[in-house]
Length: 248
Ligand SMILES: NC(=O)c1ccc[n+]([C@@H]2O[C@H](COP(=O)([O-])OP(=O)(O)OC[C@H]3O[C@@H](n4cnc5c(N)ncnc54)[C@H](OP(=O)(O)O)[C@@H]3O)[C@@H](O)[C@H]2O)c1
Image (tube, rainbow, N blue to C red; front, side, top):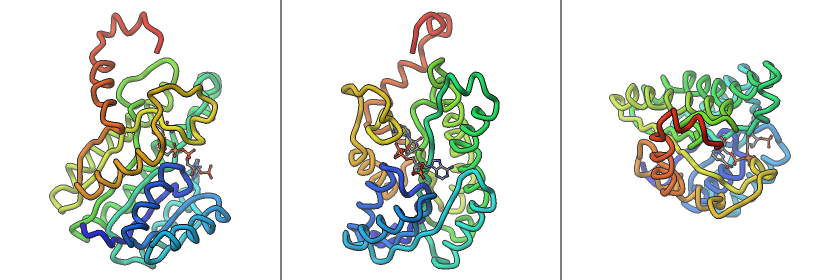
């Protein structure tokens, strides 16, 4: 991968995606941004151009609409038939308690955090396969490493995402395309606005810098910040009989 790539960013208005886009812009990349809020997309596009992006285009994207998923990718590939990077960043932190009471809420959470990204990847994978190079980077979460009572709906969607990416990575490896799974711990963004902050929370620019490095190094799975790899190793290895008795 060279520094001046053409990158599609889905969920571009996310705090983590925007910080990552700023780094791509600084390196002169051309960016295609997709998100729900078109006013915000216009504002971000203007800002990223000032920061050094070669070109910034954008279009509307709603993760809950299959038509929107397909048209976002089609219009991006019309503009950049030589697209060589993809970052998927959209997501929500659902109300776990509500998801336990309401099937629709639970399904919505899984659609946004897993099914929509799996649909994007299914639709765009043949393009990358044919291209024969490039990097697909998706933001999953440490929450997907083990189901916990406090957020197992979100966690299971992210866990499914990580497994999907593992299979896709193996499939696309033969074609020379890398698939990077990003697993952040707690990040101080609008998504966690209602959660009391502690020392484990990272700033979105720290996560963005890790994403950018992982993208260019074509890493496989990256925990951000790095220490979450060891925290999750411990959490994954707590025997179930002990896990049942603790509150996490
Ligand atoms: N913050 C954390 O602690 C943390 C930890 C681990 C992983 N992550 C993951 O990191 C990624 C980025 O999150 P963030 O922390 O940067 O949060 P954020 O700033 O709240 O961004 C979330 C983004 O998802 C978009 N989104 C939500 N529902 C959507 C839908 N139906 N269609 C299209 N876009 C939709 C939002 O768009 P609108 O602005 O239009 O709502 C927003 O751009 C997510 O995948 C999240 O799961 C976050």
